[in-house]
Image (cartoon, rainbow, N blue to C red; front, side):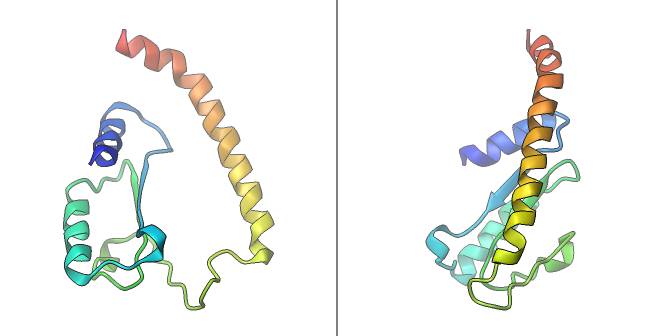
Length: 115
């Protein structure tokens, strides 16, 4: 998978707060138990304290004990409520500004490392 290689490359090359990898099911269709187990076993190969892996599933995977945080959604279509939307939008704005600042501050250092 190209995405996993890019994630691992960034973990080894760049000290960044933006090293994360998201695994979710397309079109909200659940994974069968065997495939979910394969995904979880694959994730074990590249878990790191230097990055963050976010795994979205519709059922428990038995890997919850290894997670730093587990969020259980108990109501249908209540992942992001109208009440919290503005708050999350503000947080995303702050994150975007931090990301732009980090790239600006580190661009020359990273460019010099590859020359």
